[in-house]
Length: 456
Image 1 (cartoon, rainbow, N blue to C red):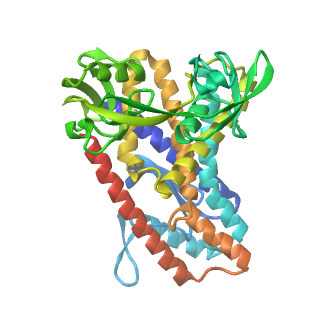
Image 2 (cartoon, rainbow, N blue to C red; image 1 turned 90 degrees about the vertical axis):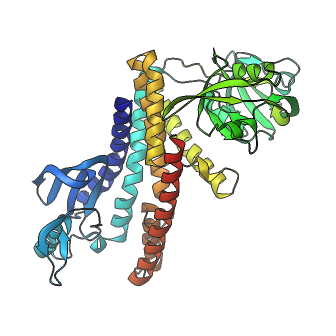
Image 3 (cartoon, rainbow, N blue to C red; image 1 turned 45 degrees about the vertical axis):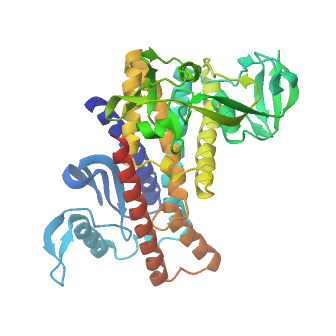
């Protein structure tokens, strides 16, 4: 368990350091003095100084920072032995910054650089996250292959069958969107379940088109009131349902029912139906370990939509050139996924409870590493790379959001300056940043409490 958590922290830290390195390298290229580049947070453990920059390792092995002259945040560093002219203790980083200001004046501060240089420096962090995701994707696909969107099952009499689709067909686009992976198609189908699907596919290297109109179905049987993913992880728990009353939570993984180990989502559905209303013992896995929950399935009528086709996404090997090409597609897919899910949260079509902070993220990574270890080191490696791609794309997009105190908020200010031809009033910017910091602190506190509660 401890090793899994350490691996999770290391992965998340690498992704954050990659982000900060983007700021660092572009700041250096534009002549901005970087006072400190650190790995971790909190008190300094050790490091060295090269040129004007202090490179150091800090006590809390989580993330990192790039402190640029004129743009530092001194709040979390320990104080030095010095005081300012008013008798207040100053942090070690602030002391170094004052030394650099005496040495260079304002010429090497971030704010004295051209607006285009400042935009480039801020944008470099998220861009390096996308670059990290791309490199990781090349490694993942190069070693583990990719999942072409091959149709594995088409049930007779369903919309997909009647539209002409058959097992073995390769789907290449849906509603004008290029499809390169089975998970890409499954994601689209999940969040556009009622939409007509205009599908382009290949059969024996010949291109065809089909129009699939999903059919509404109603299922009345014994259920526990959950929606789950293909790997039996709980996506949603219905209020006042047997699952809710028993204590089942989002992101729990259902391991077994009445002692029967589950192989796929169909096993889960079949075992619940077969209970015929009798109590069932459901073993679930969450960060704090496995636990057993007793619940009594109830007759429920659930409506949904079906196309009648399934794409499992079995991986196939790719040549080195193919791996690079598919890695670009994969990175684009991850970025688009984050954007679409964020859009759903902002419009109320998805609960903010799906958000996770550092605690929840480390917990989720730890769970995946633990589940993969029985399959061998290679599968642990593949899963770590897969999570790393997703998290890096996520961090890049989140930092580009136009929220004050994030890179995106500052970018908006600089873009406005570029359009107006003059800087935004510092007092106005300070107020906006203060509001942004308060918002982020409240959101962080909410997510932290939620993540901690979900551990148990």
